[in-house]
Length: 405
Image (cartoon, rainbow, N blue to C red; front, side, top):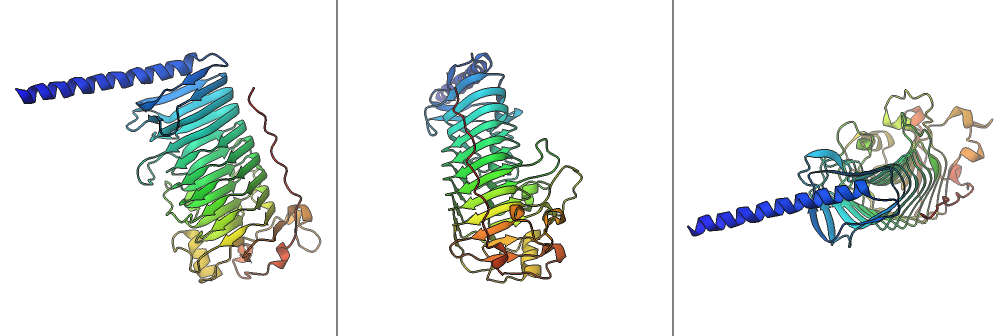
């Protein structure tokens, strides 16, 4: 009889808990739908479970706030409907701060077509071990303007922890990204500052990419500075077919086919494959069908960084590793900075050298070592001479950020 009573009590408690969680889910989604412009949505304190995505569309000057990363936790573990945890679209001046989002089926927080989006003290994570079944992006503003990501934490994304794509006027600062394939990625985006961040324990620390077949064709005017990019040596766990699946573990900073990028005053430490890689899209070996796509990196300036790396061969896995081992034959003396050496013939002067405004410049780095891989000619004339890169490019200005009204 006692056992029956105990079982009934447990059943009643579980029923009450499910009802309470359903009420919370309904309450918060209703608040997002009915929020008036200029209002604040207070999520409250606690661990809140959700079975489907939360969404907000067409709002202005709305704040969504919690009581702190460790006090307000929204978990989507076991999510049955929708892909994202939270999706915000077609809005202006939206602020999210002081809460955690966990374990959605797809992206944790996605913002699309938002003019003025601020993430502050947000933790976005998948709580298990790194897995290809995790969502692609933890924090994911795409086709947005005036993006601020400040003092956030991103963990476990199968693509990029903090990803800003096809956007303009961006600041990513004071964030921590770990156990992602890419810690921070700026893709096909213009006018971005990435500074004061810690990327460690990812496959690649910071990526600045331009890719084909996207609405916003070219990015650039990106500054990466005052970051700690350390020990990004995690095995790549991206799903098959993803472009980041080609990122070799042990990558510090990668510039892929982007123009006007300045990398300075960073500490780039013990990334086993490369500190900074500057490469064209051709090195991915993917076919280019986008006629408007520009596949070369130009006007990249790497200066005043600190490089450190323990002696040793690069990890032997993936296409890039095979190039390092069998084509470049660096052995245990791997350079900190590598450039693929594939040139756009349209930007060369009469001597076959890039015109000043298109050059790759590398100067004043501590422990500096450089290699031109000569990928254009099958890696036949690999050069470790730093002189061709001893130049300077006009420094990039900070993006013009506006405060939400």
